[in-house]
Amino acid sequence: MESEPDNQTIVLVAKTAAEETAKLYGSIFTRMVSKYALQFEAEKLKEKPQENIQGLEAVTNYILANLKRYPRGYCALIYGMAKADIKFWGSTGAGSRRAAYSAMKSIFEGSGLLKSIIGTTKDPFEALYTTEKINKEIKTASPARYIREENNQVIVVVPNCIYMDACSAFVKEGISRLIGGSECIFLIVTNVAAEIITEKHLDYRLDEFNESECRGRIFEF
Image (tube, rainbow, N blue to C red; front, side, top):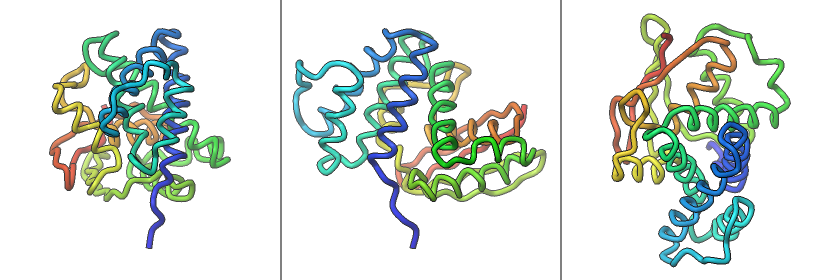
């Protein structure tokens, strides 16, 4: 039986991603992330946002303190980053990609395997399985199935995704990618991970969105 994801670890990885992305946009980014994440978290807890909770550190601590009430608190930070990204670009774009890159780099560095896996394969399918293995070891994995197709395309099937709360909010609010199409946290994170390992330019597309199972693809371009 596979171990459950460690929610606290994923919250801290998301916080790191926000901090790293702020290096691209400046401190205004973390202020915006904090504002939107606090609103999201408070709504899930059926509370009003507390005015005395300000800044990324305080919001993260609020999320961590309430993991028993809302276990997927990391979705609040993910939502906050997407909303902040929209304020800069009108849709999710460079900020989301930077956040995903920072998150996966943090995971790989935490595993101690970053240097040893870069360039080990040019095959996105193999890279995704390497990523999944590392994520399972440090308990940040969401269960998924990968299906190899022609032209190095990989079909990705994600049942009961741990990021569903954030993605459902994106759909409800009409949040989309800068180049068009729906956003998918699992796909953007795994896409970036495969890029880091293969050192190739890859992209992703969400084909089916469903609360019980989502389906998309990662491909070269």
